[in-house]
Image (cartoon, rainbow, N blue to C red; front, side, top):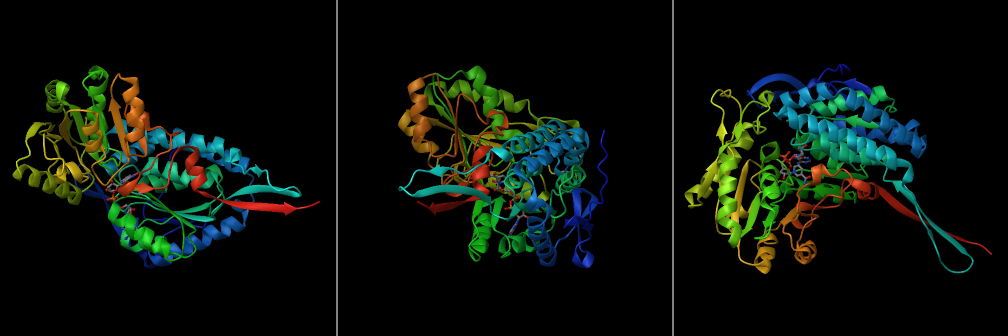
Length: 484
Ligand code: NAD
């Protein structure tokens, strides 16, 4: 087994590990216990500036000179290093983010898959020749933006680093990563592995710190030529505005209120476990969580009864116990979830069923018992706002038109799932649903590294995952040559 040896309180600039300018640090909390167990660097605008400078130097130097297949080779080596260190990375994530071990292991596997995918794609990304006027040869060059900034949330640090940084590097960009202040450890470990795998100094820089300090400085830095942001709508809007001041393109992966539509003819045996899992994975702290279940009237009573039985069997507890749910990330996040759901209960939204928090869960941990609610007014906050916790709502519908109106009836549009045996309806709904991904008789497709992912409306814009991400991390230059 690899041993990733690193001091958590250092950041990485131009191949050099050092403390933040001024030596500032932030505590690292274990969400399962509430105890502080480490510290990370509190990067400042000065650290971000140094990191952006180092990234530009790498683009001009060793990193920029590599052939596409050589970048692919490095990504492949990094993928192997991640797999060799899988248990260590998973253990770090269990402690830092409170993920049950099975989920943490799945995140490591996904990180490795992104690296493998983009390793293979690096030398298959090319321009085109374009038929044009007689006497011309016209072609396009697909070029990296240059230096890309990556602002990462705490909910899936490894997966989101994999999908955004993996694609950006494959395309030839040098990157500056700002991990979330609540969850920086696996990103720092990832950067250690990358250096050992042979990435030149400055190709990957990591500046942990607060969003309003290091994150804001990265989004606003005029040397950053593309910003990839995953997180809340509010911060995404601020990041886009900051990047607009130096006219940098932005990819925004924001939240959702993603529905699954269950028709009377659905294969319920297949659907039921997915309906619950897609809402509660990672304690519901998933941008693509299916937090709304829309069920046709004829199946409603049966589906609700079966969901309730599943909910009553669910248990939340310390991440190390690897139960159905771990804690949520922080006391703040827990209070937000509790406030939103209690407001709903006061408004009379009925509780269908509740899971449990295990009796011996540490009192300082941030546990929330999973909660199934409904039916409720489709305009209610719990049917419209992202809770980002283990809460799902159920709403009945009568026919296809009403199902579509409900499904499309929020400002978000990230993912939708449709459960029906009717082939015509499947295709009609694939076209009518407003979402970046539509799953027919499934939801999420096991993460789908190869499948373009992103939102419409308030869920964001731009696509990550699959080949689409590579297009987003490049720009097209047209070359038109006139000759005789
Ligand atoms: P957040 O928006 O507060 O933070 C995300 C990242 O942005 C963190 O790294 C944070 O430090 C940074 N940040 C905070 N303020 C900033 C600022 N002013 N300028 C620049 N960067 C700043 O979100 P969160 O609390 O980490 O995550 C929860 C939210 O993110 C949820 O709403 C969820 O839906 C969304 N999310 C979406 C996706 C997706 O892929 N669509 C994935 C994960 C999370």
